[in-house]
Length: 460
Ligand SMILES: *Cc1c(COP(=O)(O)O)cnc(C)c1O
Image 1 (cartoon, rainbow, N blue to C red):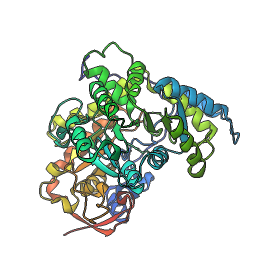
Image 2: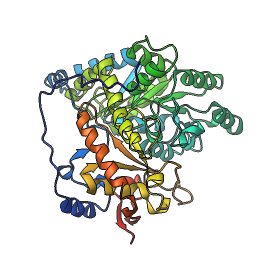
Image 3: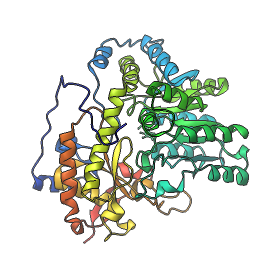
Image 4: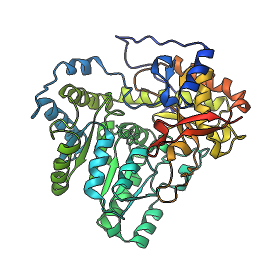
């Protein structure tokens, strides 16, 4: 397989949504009004929106047709049956609990599996995942391989769990004090880095030996499967669907954000094999989400998700998806822009630490870089660094992630290669005047998940 050949879009465009760029003086006003937080910019003022790949997917004609087949009955919707059968077929789990989005599933899983004081090791944290684990008394421990924290190291499968770290945690704390192991495919905050099948097998073996449960964060599992097919020995002739099935054969269940690899705009689910855990999840889903046959989704949304899941497994789709992201990464690498290597499945991550060496991490370089990129070009990106990491619950200190990054996240099936060219040009032009990027300080800092709504001002 050729890593640098880029397939044309495997679709033609049937419906369009115009975009426009507002003048620079207006963008300067907009970013000030948004408190230098790209989450607070009105979408109408954005030219190319790379804030997130979450819920920003373009649906196919088949999915839109499916929307018209929504069965909006309060209970027993046929669309749930379709979704349930599809998820069981693809992932191989016994039970499916629908939720309004991924964090709804994380809430349920955390409540039914974590006893206060227990450890929850995982391959790097994710914001909402860790929040729910901690809210239920869990202590998150990062057991991703060390190389994941080295932004410039270009090696495959940087998302793997370090088995020595997991073994050490078991030895020190005791298996009974570990709620479960959380394995994310791919690892969002490490740059969308995939996990190898070999690692999944080994983690299963180790956890089984101690009777520890293993749950996946399945959010970008199809992107992960593509990397396995492309780069892991023995998988080049195996279909994406079979790879996904094998990946999940090593897990006890998973949480899924439908807003990513399911190719829809909203939704999620929790999968389980254990009868007792399923009984508990079913009782809780009624409290937080809705009936076990809709869990916060409309019938039409479940139909679109069932169809989207099947489409996501088509090779032409996923090859274009991952390679379009890689194309942007390649352009930036050629221009000498510091970024996380290698390019992951859903985004290109700029290394703000090296982009803005004149700023300390306490001056929020990634937050400021994202704000400045918007002013430069109308391109909206997102901070993934110290602001996203939040504060330690006990000490009140900032968590200090080694990776201080700006994420350029590519929505699925939305933009073309030419849009990627423009983004690359914008980043390059900002890089040429990088010393003009000023540090920031908080003027408003929310207590939870602060990156969503925090406001900042520039330090002179
Ligand atoms: C988006 C995301 C979630 C949470 O899902 P939502 O649908 O946004 O609630 C969990 N884990 C990862 C890795 C994600 O990217």
